[in-house]
Image (cartoon, rainbow over all chains, first blue to last red; front, side, top):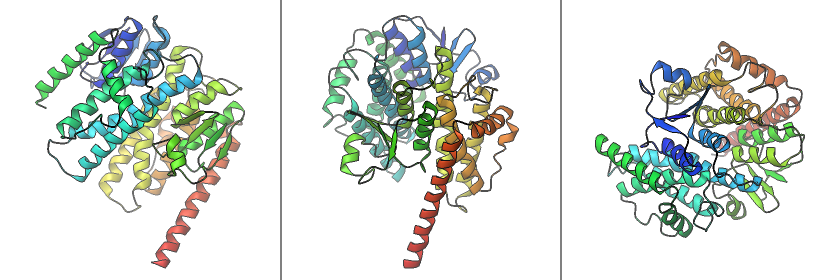
Length: 214
Length: 223
C-alpha cells in the first residue's frame, strides 16, 4: 500500500500517524510527476495530497483514507467499538476539518502583521475552533477514551498548525482557559507510539518552512 | 431520538433522508429557544443545525449524525460492508461537504446582481465539484453500488442546493453533460423510498424562502 504525499502537509501527516498507530504497513512517497500530473489527476481529479493506492483502489481525502487504513491494516482499532464512541471520534476529526484547518490555513496564508478584517476574523475562528475541541475532548491524555484513536492522529496536525500560525500572528494565551486541550497536547507529543513519527513530521515541516521562507 | 433543525437546511435534510432510508424512528423538532440559546450551545457550541439527541448523547455535524443513525437504527445498512465500498461512500459524501456545499453556500449568500467575480469563481468551483462527482459515482442509478447509501442522502441535498443557487444566478449547471451524475440525479429523485421525503424537504425549503422574502418585504416597508 502506498501513501503519496509529503509529511509537511498536515493531511498527509494525519494519515502517516494513523498508519504508525496501526503498526505500519504503508509506504510513503512523493508521486512521480507531481500532484498536477495527468497520471495523478486520473486517480485523484481534486489534485491534492494525500492519495492512498491499495491494489486497484485509489483513495483521496485524508479523513477517508484514515478510516480505510483503520479497517484494512492489522494493529489496534483506531475507532471505539460503540456507535457513540465512534461518533465522538469522528466529531473531533470533523471539527478539525471544518473549523480548525480552514481558519488556520487562512492565517497561514496571511502575511505577518496583517490586521485586515479577514485576518482578524481568521484569528477569532481559529480560537473558536480550539473552544469547540475543548468542549468535546476527553480529559485522560487521549482525545477520546483511554487509547489512541483517529482523533489523536487528526488533531495533532491540526493543533500544531493552529499554534504555529497563532504564534506567528502574535496571539497570546493560546491554550489558556482550555485545560483539556493543554493536557492532551502535552500528552500526545510524548506518546511512545506516535513519538518518532511526530518528530519525523516536525522535521519535514521545518524543512518546508525554511524552503518557503515562512 | 430527536433531530433538531429545519428541513430548509440541507444539512438537516441530509439526516432526514438517511432516517427515511432506514425506515424512520427519529422525531424532527425545532429546538425550543433556537440554536443560539444557552441550552443549545451547551450541547453544540458550534451553534448550527442539525443536532441529534439520543439519551445522553448530543451529536452535532450532519455527516457524523448520518453514520451514527446508520449504526443505531434498524433498517437496511446505508454503508457497504467492505472497507473499499465504505471508503467510496465516505469519499462521495466528503466531496459534497468540501467541494459542493461551500461554493453553493457562497452562491446562496451572493445577491442576484452581486459581485460578478465572486459569483463566477463559485460557479466554477461548483462545476469542478460536479466533475469530481462524475469521476467517482457509480453508473447504477445509485451513488455507489446497487442500493441506497449515505452518499445518495448527502448528494441529493448537496446537488439540489447547487442547482437551486445556480438557477438563481442564471447559470446553466450542465448537469446532463455529466452522464453518470445526470442519470443518478434523475434516479435518486425518483427513488420510491426517498421520493416522499424529498418532496417534503422541497416544500419546507419553499415555505422557508417565502417566509424570508415576506419578512424582508415587511422590513423594507417598515424602514
